Image (cartoon, helix red, strand yellow):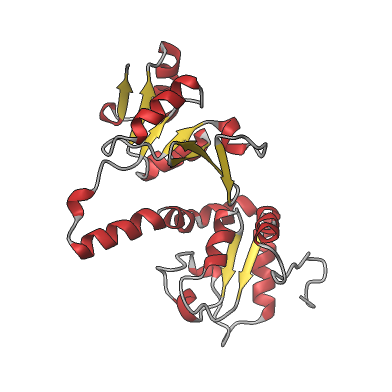
Length: 244
């Protein structure tokens, strides 16, 4: 910090969860040279919040599973210098988008943590047959029609939706009785279920990554169907069209 007084350093301490969330949402770089005794929450929260993560190599940060970021963002405290870390920070500031893109795999793994953990438990207990088709996304904006179908789908173990695509609803911070906002992400309340609302760009990324496997259209118009084909360029078998 003394070597780079021009950088706005902000220690994460004596903060409420909401204050931590707000800070990470506007920061560009998160640095953690701690002991990393396990699969630490804060580095993952920082990455999902949009930060580029820089760590040491102690504890779980020393492997490429718990924190799977490129080696250029990890520094061995026994051999590195503070100047080397400062240089990397400035490189991130100079080309943030490039650095952020290099950590896309880390963010994708974090987003899949819950599903992966459930599958690992199922495999360990020999209950793989309980799993439904995963990665279902309704690729239409929230509306009465979509909401009605979502309620129906939420009761269906085979086609229970994981996402609804709606740029405005995904980004809004305005309170709404049907929306739950957590960790800068919005969820639609559908009975006892929560369906994450994501942007079109996120949906396309998740589809290309294979995390969204089926694109659902509910009584689509010709324009909605054409837009889906143009934007996602999906395989024919990945598009599910439902009617009442």
